[in-house]
Length: 299
Image (cartoon, rainbow, N blue to C red; front, side, top):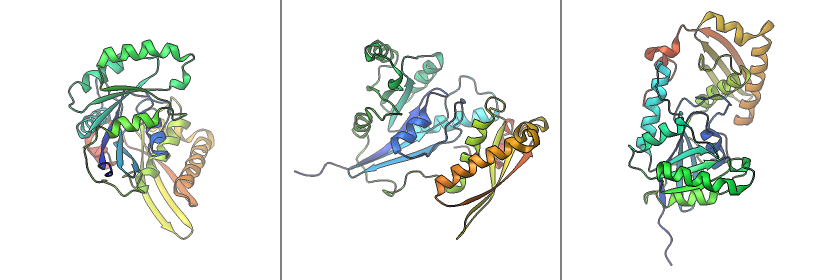
């Protein structure tokens, strides 16, 4: 009996902001490639997570959550990124939260109707549903909302039904050799990952105080036998935001820096020396030129 044809392609994780796409991506590739926080719009860029097996390779794409009315330059950048990711996909994975359908989910549904790639609805967080009998009416409702090719209830926490989800995706990928080396998990550089991990700790540490008002720019990334030295700028929009990041006596920035250094050490597997500074760049998130200078490259 001949071996099955090798399949390879792109599966985009689509969904409203804060629905858990990044957590699901990390679980699917069994490695942290996309930062996670409780805040909406934490993901700002196209993030690739690659899963390779002998007869197939899936390149999962995490993307910004879709907004109804992108107003600021950074919102428009994320919307362009999301549109480009949809166009790339061989399969669309529409991620929804178990037992919750919102107007924001309906917006995503409407955008997906413009796409040619088949849609698989991924109903996540089923581990939180008490009594699985409650799940069936919700699955039926979502099916009537979008009429997908398939609908799969999963749990990112327990990886329940991941095998079935992978099989359904692979069956819809084109016959193709692998696009990436078998040991590659993402296409992002360590420098990019460093900026994202620092931003993740800032997002978590600052809670609701600065949701979109900051970004991180890596000024220096030097590796040697002793480890890695990273110097990073935390860019805020207004002078009044600088003391919020610093905290009383600089203690908040020290705590965030400590958490970021430990996350970087775990990621890189080497000692990390981290230097953080705060820079005020007025209204950077409203300026297309400022976004480009800070590494937000339009797709």
